Image (cartoon, rainbow, N blue to C red; front, top):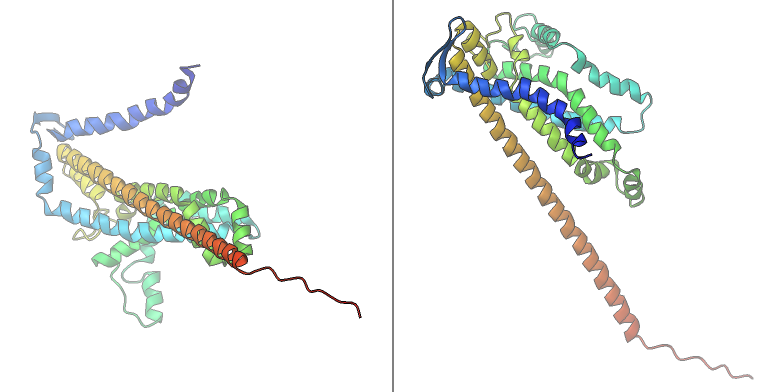
Length: 329
């Protein structure tokens, strides 16, 4: 009886130790050595690989591109997923059809999504530039310029992951008691007021989970920028080269596995920092909202108690009316 719970959860931890923890620690060992793809382990160099990577302008440019794509994809993705989940939670016909429909982009292979969007956002004769030309806007260099390329790649990320996050938020919304919405409707609250006062606060723990997973996935983005053009190197001048693409270039193109492992560990540390920052910020906002709601409840209780005392004082202050004596004629 004492060992059975540990036996039930042991498969996950054993699998994580083999495919997660061991590669992480071994990558740290590789980052401390000169390591060639063909020759294998070389001499111990300590933190020289980290010093080399941090001194490269390409690394900081890749980090800036990664953060830009991450922000352009994560924030709109969370907002869209929350709105779609609220719409799917409403009384719609054919709910199963719509819920399965928003999940279809997640099922499509990333390579196929990258190829399709790469053609849609082509600089010369892409569909997006053709539509912009019909409304009088000059063609945009989706592959040539930095910010347009980040917007195009973020669009691919949002297309794939918005429906997945929407279903997670939908599961949290369905766990909210319907009595709360009925009581709010009787009090005269509109649908929009119910969404911000009931739905959003009740799904906040799930939103924290979605934000954390989106942060980890957004900082590790590889498939979309890799498939955005035929070379897969992040543009002619590194316009959309992310940290993972820079890692790939060091490890496989230049065969410098020690430096590539250093980039991997730096990315791991960056993800940890962003995850802790997101967790602290969301919990801080949640605690502030809870404190504000508690203060409002205390104010309402105080107002009701004051009103009761005023009524009681008024009743005690007014003397009882004397009975009217009716004399017979």
